[in-house]
Structure formats: structure tokens, C-alpha cells
Length: 385
Image 1 (cartoon, helix red, strand yellow):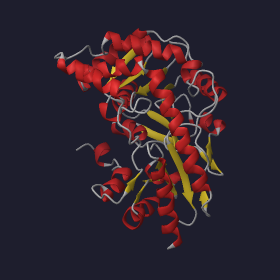
Image 2: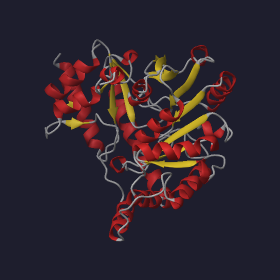
Image 3: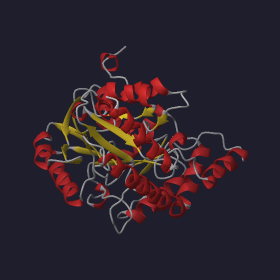
């Protein structure tokens, strides 16, 4: 086995989850998904497609109808995006990996803003890149970016900058001015930007275009920018494995080849479900966002009332990221919470060493009473220490 693969760390989130899977007494908040099923109209579109016998290969870049629908959807949120710049992928994870494969050679320098979902640093490492991290800085439970530190880290030697905002796990979100500053700097250094914006619709601040700031709002079509998206979060479609990339025109031919050699194409019936999701987005997504905001506003004040907890409301995403003072080993604490309290959370050090001592709580629960009971279990566990 290649050394880069041998050296990969196993998922600490999975390690905690594996300790509690199958236990009916555990309240699980470890994975980044809602416990609400995909809406009927989306599922029915996939069933109808299967009933029509659509079980064959599709175009590498996706069904033309879906590419057009994605382009129209994106153009409703941002400056016009042409369908010729859209590549449909078998999930957001695949979208990100394809982007890294397209841009990174072994030995290239890649900079990532952390803490971050571990796949984003693992993917370039798998390809043999030299991955360097710029850490967000916590202040009273809120994480912020030092733009000067990022500028210093990204030089003419940096092939790719990876940014996830709204961020998993911290909820940190870039401002428009910060995006412009980053883009301007990367133009000077010749650095590509891979923007993971899968949480852009899960945004809780007032905004006229109903989403978080995007690099697409400040970039031109020919900028060295790749934006990754997924149907998973905003449409409750985590298990469907359907995503997309917005690419500069110069990358489109090569991306078709990469998709062919990775997955060939996304399944047709899944793409039909995606078309239905986009057709009903204004029925589905605003309801999801309103519910998630209510979940956030239920959970975070309860956590903040616990002595020794540092937490702040996330501006975007679906997570409360909090620090337990006096408990410095996140993985050990997360495992103990499963075993001793029946509470399943993700350890902060799964996302970066600097998040040691933090825990991630996915608040995407259809029943807010589960969140309240989870906090009560945490309180009882802390009282027993």
C-alpha cells in the first residue's frame, strides 16, 4: 500500500460512532446529517425514474436537464452561472476529490483553513501533496480568520487553497470583503481556490439572496476557482450521493475524463431526484433552514448555561461547536459520553489538532426534545465527574 494511504488517520468520528452504533439508548448527534427523511416529492421522482427503466449510464457531466436546473438555481442566488460550467458528481465528497485530482500533483503545496471536515485535508494528502494548515482562532466560542496569517501562508508556491465556509464544524462564515481579499491575493500568487460551499443555504443571518456569501459573487468565470456543492444538506439527501461542481470553462473537458475514470456518471434516477429537488426548492429549503435555526436557538443557549462551556451560535451550517473546560482529550471524552451518558457527539480533534478539547453537536433533529434531553444527559455526566 502507498505510504500516503498507510499514513492516513482513520475517522475519529467513525471511531466514536462505532462505539455506540446499535445501542438504542444512545442519542446520536455525531454525523453531519438530519434525522428527517428526504421529502416525498424527491423520492417519488426517483421511483418514477426507476419504473420507467432509467437504469443505464448517463453523460459523464450529468443529464443536460439537471445541469440546466443547477445553473438556473445557482443563477438565482449568484451572478449568472452557465450550464456549460456545471459538472454533476456522485456526491459532494466525489466533487471535492475530483477537484483535487484535477488541480494537485504529488509534491504540490496545498493550504487548508482548519478546523475542517477531515476529508478536505485527507484528499490532497492521498495524492501526495504537502498539506499546510491555517487555523481559525477561537474567541469566546466564536471562530474567526486572521486574513493576514492566511496571506502569509499562501504564496506563489501554493498550488491550491481549500476553504470551507460556512464551516464544518465551527459554523464560521466568510464575509464578502474577506472573500474578495482572498481572491485578490490568490490572483497575485496564481493559486487555485477550492471553495466547499455545501452549507451555503444553511445560513441564519439576514441576507437578500437567501444564502451565505459565495466566492461566485466576487469571481469571474475564468478565475482559478472551483466551487463544490451537494444536494445532501439543503434537500435532506445525504444518502443519495449527488453533488456538483462549478468550474472555469478551461477545466470542463478534463473534468469529464476524470468523472469517467472515477464513477463514470451519477445514476440517472438519482439525477431525476435532484431535478425534482431543485424544482421544489422554495418549498423545501426555507422550511429546513427555519427548522435548523430553531434547533440552533434551542440548543446553544442550553449549552451556554452550563458552567465551563464555551459556545457561540453558528452563523451557518448545522453544528454547535463547543469547548468543555477541563476536558482536553476530545476523543476520550466523546467515547466516555457514549459509554457513560448515552450521548453521541463528534470529537473536535477529528477536525484539527487545534480543536482538541472541543466537541461537535449536529443539531439537525426533527424533534427538538432530543436536543433538550441530550443537554440533560451532558449535565448529569458533568455533575458526576
